[in-house]
Image 1 (cartoon, rainbow, N blue to C red):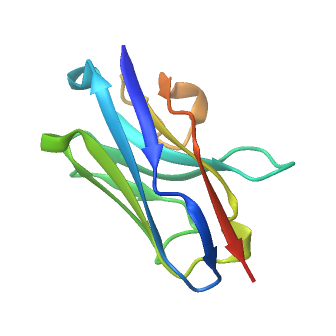
Image 2: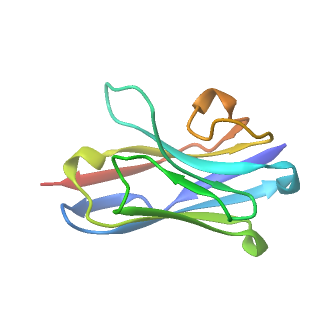
Image 3: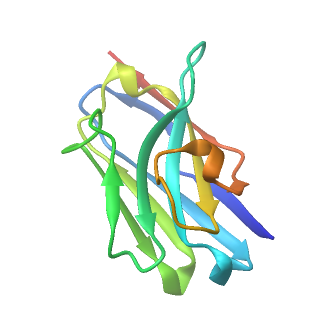
Length: 124
């Protein structure tokens, strides 16, 4: 089992920045990749970004490319999402996820472990 805990959410003005963190514990060596997803009120969940366990491969959704950057620190069992140029449309609950196998990084159904989420609110 792998446990994931997110932190770093909050309220920020449009154009501002936040850095989300995800701390993993348990059998972290069993994970192949990790990702961030988000869900806005009344909307379906959305892929944000993913990173391979080695950190050598990353994928960002078009909607955040150039503004958000995913990274990881395996020694600390942490994953980060640096969010710059935030927009009101980025307001959502952000979730950390981990998967045991290869496959489509952007498909939420392929992820085995999920955190509880951290709320990000961007005011205009």
